[in-house]
Length: 131
Image (cartoon, rainbow, N blue to C red; front, side, top):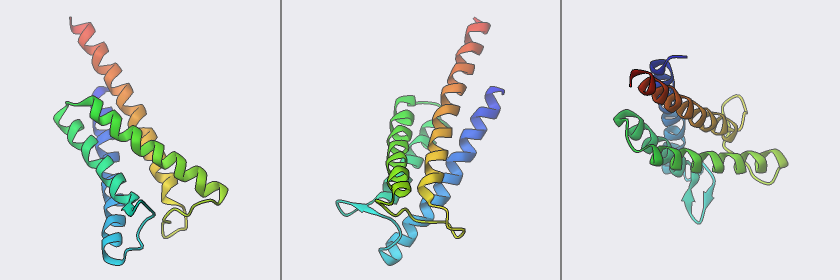
């Protein structure tokens, strides 16, 4: 996989995540029932921020620490939520087909982390070969 393919794959996944989380945030502000809350903070808003910051870092090609910090945070939240959903201890928002969105979040954030690591390795290898 070339460096540009991984770059644009990350970009597309971030945009998909923005639309998904953004829809939940809009629903939350309209009805107050869009997503679960921890200490009165809607988790979908936290997840939205965890898509926005990595998108900015990725587009500017800077701040990899922030990229990994926010994708790691959201990935951890998605993992805990998925486990709790699976065990019946929590209820994640669902898609129209009935699939819990926390499963999709876990998949998206895991993909973002893996692709960024791969992207960085390709970039470093290309820099090394050009040196």
